[in-house]
Picture 1 (cartoon, rainbow, N blue to C red):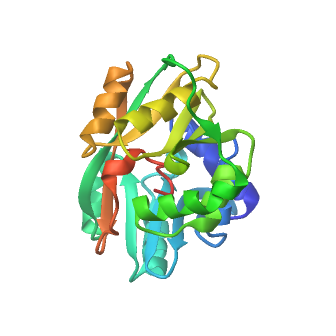
Picture 2 (cartoon, rainbow, N blue to C red):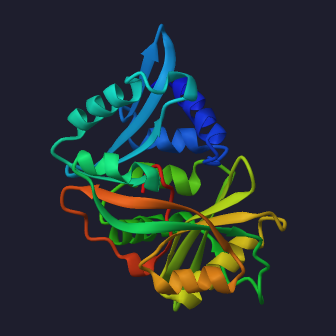
Length: 271
């Protein structure tokens, strides 16, 4: 994809109801500039697929979209095959809609768990205990991301944390050490929180409150891995309602992820 292609694809994502961030494109391209593919029909974009590579062994797949006028013609599947060929033999993850699980399984993907999107308005409780992410904390933030996700995506994460003012990164400290990290991301509609990485539920709740305080009372969404029962309980306790789900699937041995500290997935497009 060119930069213009990616802008078009994110417009498709908005039309599909995926509610992308207002400044996702630059951060996505920072992850892997060659990791975004477009199929064309008569010189016009007709389907999209991201196949972002992290390090030498891991990749993540997303933005698999074919607009309605091009469906049923094999365009999307041809692009899928091209993407799969580029990724082999890397371990590859995706967050796909449940209706496509069987199709992904035919390409060798196995279900790991569900992610549930909780949405609503969060009213902060108590004083704000969070701080803006400082440049001196970037190394610790990157180390936390590697430990929680199981893969290294430093270029993407650096842009995600500091690349655009539409995303606000905040931290929670305990005894001077990083106990949690959260990012508030302005989207086409409202906000998303992601990542929300925390040592425990109390830290996650403090971060969620600190981020919600910056929404002006707008609606926010939090994508929670279902195996993290503390995260589910937190979302429910704060009045957020499940409205959407994805299937986290892996082709190849999954990386060693720390679901217990994942109170909110960074983004379904890049894991």
